[in-house]
Amino acid sequence: MATKSIKYSTFAPSNCLVMKASKKTILAEVKRYVIITLALFTMCLGWTAFLIPNHLMGGGVSGIAALIYWGTGLSTGISIFVINAVLLLIALKVIGVGFGIKTGYSIVMASLFMSLLQHFITDPMMAGEMQPFVTDHFLAAILGGGLAGLSIGVAFTQGGSTGGTDIIAMIVCKYHNISQGRVILICDIIIIACGFIVGNTIEDFIYSCVVMGVCSYCIDLVLTGNKQTVQAFIFTSKPEAVADRIANEMQRGVTMINGTGWYTKHEGPILMVVAHKRESQQVLRIVKEEDPKAFMTLNTVMGAYGKGFEPMKR
Image (cartoon, rainbow, N blue to C red; front, side):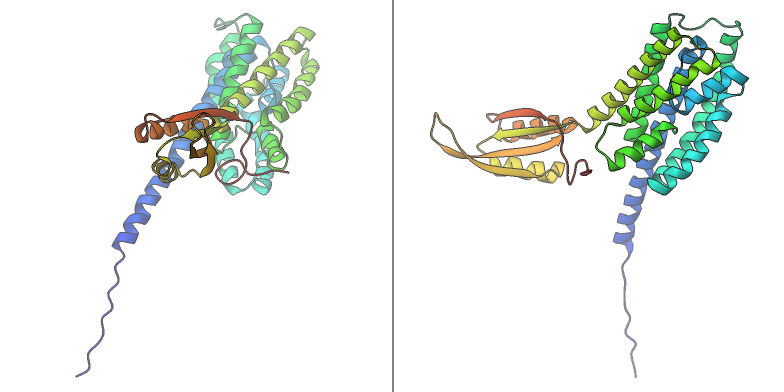
């Protein structure tokens, strides 16, 4: 009597791992979109509550939309949507589909927020039905530019964009080692210069330049703080234990250098670690737990390029 061989396959463990990984990925992506949404709302609030009511210009598509609003009364949300739709096609081609999806989402949400906030805040202020939050132009420039810059920077850290000149900045920075804030500043100076078309004065132009300076500074402040790196030199009697924990828990490389103490004349290893600034506290914690008597120096690094850090650019 012939017997049939039965093959058993077990998929449960691998399926569980896949499900856990997928769930983690989905949650991370949802978190990114939530942060981008909050950043967009904050940016639109800065425009509608501080800049437009005080006849101050910013840059980017929002600045162009403000020009159109002052000249024709057309909703800033509609202008932002139409102009950004064209730039989105460029982002899909040059930067990639992932960026295009986030940017498309940002365009829709920014247009919606601008339209809603304009209806409830800007229009009543312009009609005299509601008192402006700030009447001092310099203070309005600081608040409006600061909110816009911080919001754009946060959106960049999540792999997204608020549209407009942000797309141009990300394209340029993809191929050249120049700060995104500087690229946006150059584009925006050209845009605010067009404010004279709708009757802006020299005073308005100067305050608009203040807006651009504050916005650019805040963008670079967020991005630099997010990417800033540190270099640690660790002198410890337990180099293997410290190095193993840093490598396993932080997934950071550790270089062991042979050194000699001039006073003691004792030879011993020195550990060198390069990590993001936000990870420095974790390095300190590991060293303290393994060797409370260890000696450690921490230095700020101008830039770190390669695996685990920024990609090298031309």
